[in-house]
Amino acid sequence: MILTGILLILTGIICTETKLVHVDLSHNFCTDSDAEDMYGLDGEETFHADFTKEEYVMTLPEFADQFGMEEGAYQQAVGDKAICKQNLATVIQATHNPTVAQAPPMSSIYNRDDVKMGSKNTLICLVTGFYPPPVNVTWTRNNKMVTQGVSSSQLRINLHDGSFNQFYTLQFTPEEGDIYTCTVEHQALDRPMAREFDVEVPAEASLGPAVFCGVGLTLGLLGVATGTFFLVKGNQCN
Image 1 (cartoon, rainbow, N blue to C red):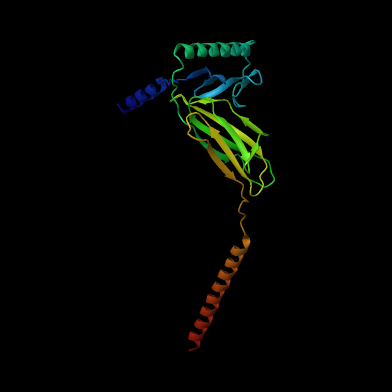
Image 2: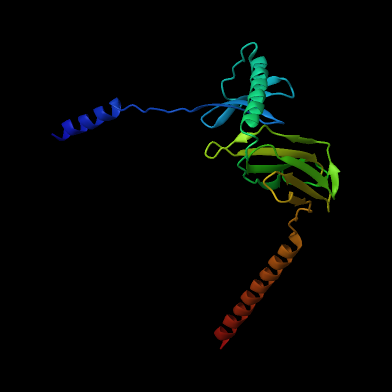
């Protein structure tokens, strides 16, 4: 009876099938000043149309199976962009330019690598949760505008609420005392939102205090041991 029960359990395990559910994503939109044509799988982007480079850009990691794009795929994306903008203009005119829902962005600034004075690094300004696009982001160094070494990512949509995220980066060489600022402007903000990054000299561990403390502790212990030795000898003599 026990053996039969074990066999039934094993049979049930062998016959169990695991069903995997995958989510395919196609994201196409446009605004008066921007457009996006992106495809993804399970929440991760696989490729997008780069309208500046005029090509599709594959964003799969190196270990994933890469695949080629069909001939004319980018030209199709350009055509979809033109149709989207035409439809947008028609809808705005038909609805008498209705008020658009707005969500203000949040931002943060951080360095990509550990700061080493004089070594090239990258500052990242992450702008999240805004609607509608676009946002305008500017960089300053010690209150002076910086335009060299600046780049931005594609817009990324949050599937749970339809808002957007975007990365902005600045290539820089840390120098002590420099202050970098990432300023974000969006129609849902009452005023520009600024985040600062102060370049500070990394604190280096000093061996001096530790060495002196160790030597002092050692001498103290030796003193206690010596005193104890003579105390014991004195008691023995008595």
